[in-house]
Length: 385
Image (cartoon, rainbow, N blue to C red; front, side, top):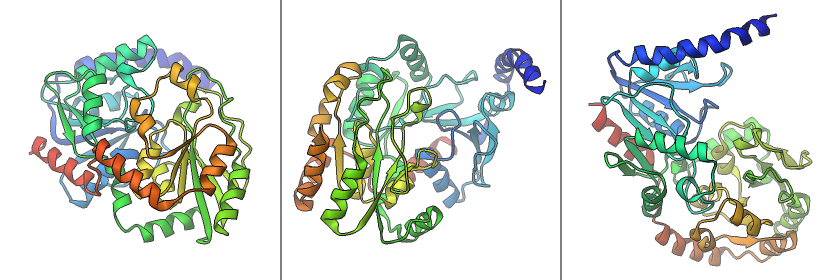
């Protein structure tokens, strides 16, 4: 009964919400208000999390608002929670001085000239093609172009990223590019011993258990045939090589909620960590990472720990989505079969990997050094003065 009433009211509510945007555009902007939009309100994580923490650390007198999809999403007490796609959210957006987002979804408010929209891509470039050089649905591309047109600041993590933004993200003439790095990667450059202990304790992972992190991305054609990594076999190889006990953490891309899930069989040895809010905390305690075309590999490289690429469908994927030329220059060993990745792990040489990584980072031009959040907030202060 209640569900039926809600379903009947929702279309009317959407119309009222749409009309409210037209009314709220006349409201004054609150100078110290910042609204964060993480994805579609799916949690407290990614770069936006670490920006808000830096603002809190500096004790800046800002009114912080975080858009959430569900009320059970946990947000720190120094941030106000507002449910996304509600009239209250339209009000907060309409009266914010700054809106920070990592989503290309169209925003439910009419942006004023006195407001600043900051876009931080949720992924690093260098892996799969995206935006203007990817084979994407026409509707998405048109929405993305409209989003870029109203964006005032694009955030880059380095010289290569800046060029990709200029080439493929439809940046308008009025927009700036802040080449300050990705705040989520700051933790890889600081002493996080205690944080790692806390995460392990929370997850009940003993100190003598070693962790391999696996993050495959989705396939636009909904195929699951490429998800054939034999993780049990690879764990045996790792244990044989190191003489230690290992487990796998597997995190699936958020877009899997629209695609078929890989046919993995999870267990105490192979754990599905997809519901863990902040995957960068999981990477913090992992000792190796495996991905296919996800930029998590580039994030993990900041730890200087080994990264392997397992891409059994690379020929098909490159035709379907497209791969950047930089993908073939990555310092990570590219494997197409289970035999290849097991051999790569057995033969892994830390010194050779460190040399490849150093050469790559110079060409890639990343500015990540543990101070990205500080640089971002310093730029933010110039806007909110």
